[in-house]
Amino acid sequence: MSGNSRTESTPSSYGAITEVPGIRVGQAQRRSDGWLTGVSVVIPPPGTIGSVDVRGGGPGTHETDALDPSTMVPTVDAVALTGGSAYGLAAAGGVQRWCEENGRGFPVPGGVVPIVPAAAIFDLGRGGDFSARPTPDMGYEAALDAAGSTDGADVVRGNVGAGTGAAIGAGNFKGGLGTAAVRLTGENAHIVVGALAVVNAAGVPWQPGAPSPMVGEGLNTTLVVVATNATLTVAQAKRTATAAHAGMARALNPVHTLADGDTIFALATCAEVLVPHSVVPIAALIELQSAAAEAVRLAILDGVAEAEGVATPAGFLPPYPAGTAQGSI
Image 1 (cartoon, rainbow, N blue to C red):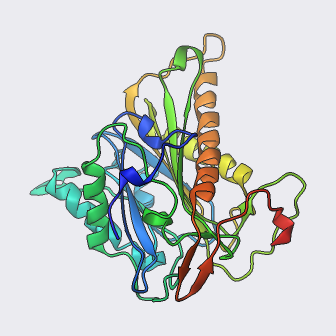
Image 2 (cartoon, rainbow, N blue to C red):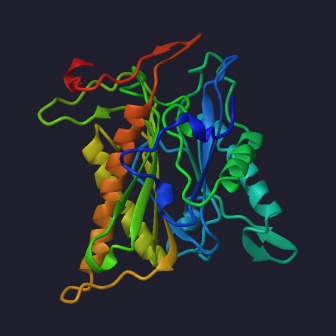
């Protein structure tokens, strides 16, 4: 099964990353014959700048060094989130192929070089076949799905895209893909911050007073794309990605462990100007970064809530039961 079947999902009560004008999301997934994995692609408008902050001790990433504020190219043509661990990073090649066909990329003599950073979760073998992992063709399929969506289209959540084979609680419960959006206040009410999260965590949803669960033997990662229509520099996008990790820590326990590859990408379409606070100009940027953390928290909770139990030859992954204390795992 593949593609982003938008009729299968109801709108999230948390909103969606596609509330940021120009941001489009596409999915591709396989769910049978030993497969339980997929790819999610975020395609922003041309000229979107980006950065990243990797906090997990076991990341699987591609082209993240290109997003450092000190490097040459400030823009991002697409972001690929994929299953398949390091093998699945091959899906980024398919997204690059779509970008090249559509003239998206850094101009060089003879053509363009698409800037497509990517990150992967560990879901190998969850469908029963260890060799069933995302391919360049799946990346291309997800990019086509994103390109074919309309501006502002809702995002299908749960067991889709890179969330297809996601699990939480060290592989004891089903994880998934979630999304959310937060709007700033006052003079900056025109600024939107959205998040798309693939929740494949060693941890489980955080609850006050609950002890840290045993992380077991699961290999895990939570991946997030944060996007805003505000005008930011690459350095400000980097700091926004860093601040957004607070939302991950508020949603999951534990996070940023050696068994996680927790990564947050930050994109800014630069379509709107962030109005400085009249007394403390930097306060507006701080509000945006706080909104990014909240959007991440909500997107992660959405991904867990929308995940459905799944049975494969490798076993059964039940949904995470609402209200279950962490210490019971």
